[in-house]
Amino acid sequence: MVARERILDVALKLFRIYGVKGVTMFDIARDCGMSKKTVYEHFSDKQSLIDLGMQQLLNTHSAYFQETHTAAENAIDELVRSMKYITNMARSFNPVMLFEIQKYHPDTWKNIENFQRDCILYGITENLKRGMSEGLYRQNLDLNVISRMRQLQLDAAFDQLQYPPDQFDMSAVMEQITAHFILGIATIKGHKLVNQYLQIKEEE
Image (tube, rainbow, N blue to C red; front, side):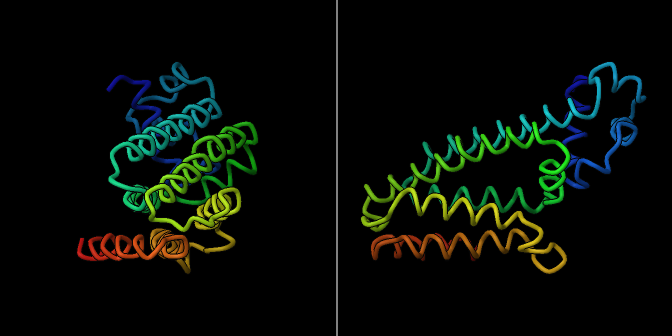
């Protein structure tokens, strides 16, 4: 791994664990096993690391969701796969990172908001359409309402005020709200599939 890639990888790991405010360029250099001068040769400041790191993270998420949409057998399979991905991500993710980016780095946060609209909200809407066409979701769903409700659920799971990390495990929260969401929109046919997928998940 070249120095620039290593610096970015380490910085993103530290941001995800500790948030962005408390991580210094010295911390990043130390964990990379290189001098701070070397880090600055590749990145002018911490802001550039935050911007590039978040963009890389968003690109990874976007690629996964696109791949899942293609590979999933049906809409419920797609939704469960996405839930597992988000749950696994949540286990190594400190919600304070998003809070600090929103508060201290508005330009970076704008990119995250664009991702939430162009990727997350769009993906939720497309999944709803797919499930309805497959007869797995109820036909009377209002796509604009339900898609935004699901997005709000996802946002809330990462909100420390709603689910304080010392009281809630984020992955458990994500699993609960997703199961509730699927069961609420599924048809009888869909419910049978949901129960199968949830059973498989429990056995894993």
